[in-house]
Amino acid sequence: MLRLAENGLITPEGNYGELVKKLRQKVAERPNDLEGLKLLTGIEAKIGNTDEAVKAQQQFLQLLGDKASDLDHFNYADLLINQVEGVVSPEAEKALRAALEINPENGGAKYYIGLMLAQNDRPDLALRVWKQLLRADELDAPWIPLIRNDIERLAVLAGDTKFELPPIDSTPGPTAEDIENASQMNDEERQEMIEGMVSRLSERLSTEGGSPNEWARLINAYGVLGDFQNAQSAWEEAKNIFKGDAISLEKLSAVAMNIGLKK
Image (cartoon, rainbow, N blue to C red; front, side):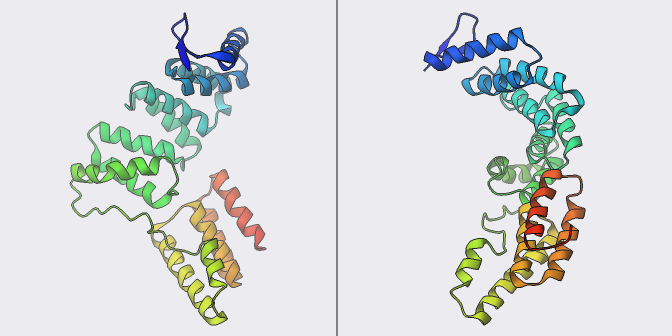
């Protein structure tokens, strides 16, 4: 249960509410407490005190300065956007640009930039951004369903009469389940099936690009086939594509090292 406190803030009832009030008091007394501010931001946002969450995150960013990550800036932008019911304000755009400067592959920031372009009567530019995200990001990324819900309408506004929403199962390539199923086949059938999947995935990634997970699947699939020359080539290409994206490179490196490739 939630209740409205005397100071106008929504406060949970019971023991949890008491903990929230103690955290607010702690942050008020220790305004340079980064962990306290981070925790307070999340709690205030969760219980519906968006204005207070914005203030806490803003203070958190000011304390971090140049040490703030792309996610820190993105979280601030996300709160600002929610504060005004989905409008990407100039202040939110500034935070999004800061996130993308640190990590150009921040999908959430790209989604909001596309939304901002659409809100500013540039559906053509917004469509370009969202198309790229549909090709590059994982289907379970939280912004993908939002894009899929709106992109067809955006395409109409942009005058793109040829746009077709890609089906959800349009990402080819061998998964762990595919390879497990292949174990039920004879050697020749299994080899043919896996080679076909790997070939299609490799061709699509080379021509259209793809997400870090898809490149990892390609590298690992070559390892399953024992084709370490192509695995190494795919790994080298992926390193160039995701240069500067530490999180993606770490994920890809783990797969490459697991099958014995060179760094």
